[in-house]
Image (cartoon, rainbow, N blue to C red; front, side):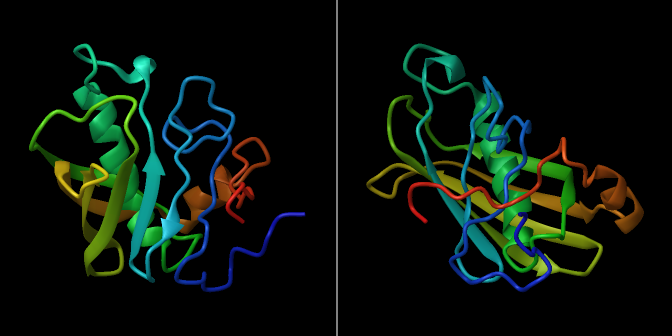
Length: 167
């Protein structure tokens, strides 16, 4: 039975995942399988470790993978207030502060900066266990129209909260 996503989620709730999304798909064979939690009603966080499949230079994450993680965090910040409010990224600007290492526990955080309804601006950052930021992004997000969302909500998409070991 699918949980009721129409209720306002708890400020620390585990967010839904899909089945095949590269960033959050729980069945994505080569994806990141990111698991986001709300960090309040307009922010999110996830802990993750990148491995050899995500390598650019030896021991360092590929910049495209880093950007994918940041992109997911931008849109997940919007979800913190409503699990049915999906957006797509219209613009993203990434600043790589230092190489993001592989085989290291990382934290990504996303935060809504301005919400104008259909258009949202958000920021995200990836940090090391000591708090050092390796990369950050800001982006403009656009709400997916309800009629498009209705077509996307299929059993194949599998958009739901999948319990994990922490819940």
